[in-house]
Length: 310
Image 1 (cartoon, rainbow, N blue to C red):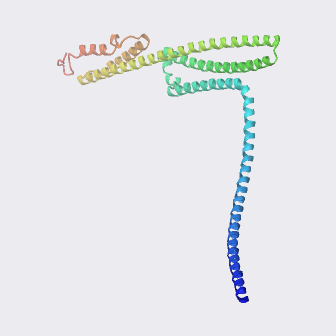
Image 2: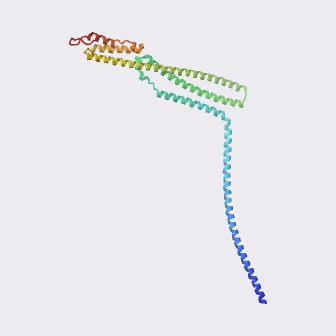
Image 3: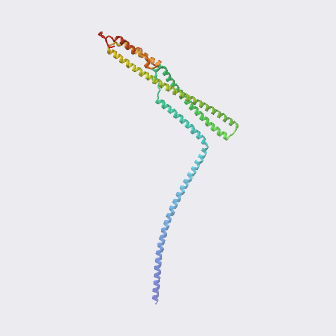
């Protein structure tokens, strides 16, 4: 009986040991799982700390940018007080740009339409009116350029006066007083006088431009007339040469008749250049009439005494 009892106790102890062993294994597995979770939580915590450090650095950068933008905003707000001055400067620069473009356009036109007076030296003796017109056109062009430069200088002075006027107006707004008001009225009167002078010079410049355009039109008409006279002269010259060739073929002496024809051409050229008129209404002495008269007198006989064609 004692042995049976001890055997039972032994079995109970063995069962408890097995149960405890199973519980210990289970607790070891749970402990390993907890260690794994702790490792994962530690990795997550490290990553969170790194992300937090990055966010802190980004926040510092953003704060620096905020301070910079705030300073720029203050500067821009301070510069907004000079907006009127900047607008005046923009207008002045726009005027200067327009004037420079006008100068460039005028220079391009002069390059495209070159007017060299040395090509017209022959007109000084043959056609002094055209030569005088050309000289007058060049003088007017020079005067126009000079007046344009004067107007530009006056515009610059007016811009300076306007800038000074704006500055004085700002000073007057800060320091009001009767003396400043008197000075301001004086400056306004000066500005009005300058504007009147500018308008007068602008009107004078426009009149000179119209005169230059009229001179150019008159010059073109004179050149057209000169070219027509040249064509008529060459056509008459060709007719005379053909008549002289016909006389030579008919056996006439060409010496006297050729000289008379050249003299008539010279007289005809002078009459057309200085007297004017249509070539069809002018009489050319020594050309066709002089050539026909001897041919009518001496064409009755040839060298052999026979009658020639009448």
